Length: 156
Image (tube, rainbow, N blue to C red; front, side, top):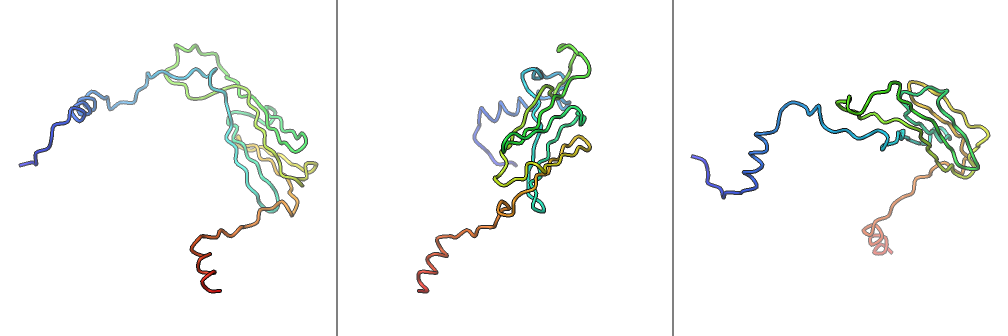
């Protein structure tokens, strides 16, 4: 025999809601209008072999659709992903792909050799390599804790 538990109206409502939920995916949910959501490519940056490497995911674009430029110490990647077909909103079942013009900007560190920047494009990813000055490369900084400070004081 099972244990008795207090009746909860919220638990009962959850049970009823689970019974009514369909196990099938919701194919006919409303979707966001792509005109409200601009395409913004994901960007990552890291330092490798004394260079700043900036990579931007631009699926569906070609190299000719992109513009990479430098103004002062600001790197700018611009482009536009255009919809290839005209489909009316009411004809869609789901639309999660966004279209439109984008512009991503990134401040470069001092000492970056902006005259030696290189850009390449492969498989929907634009990769920009910026040579850095040796002083610009990151250094590891030791983090001290209060416990370490107390040990040092007690040793003196």
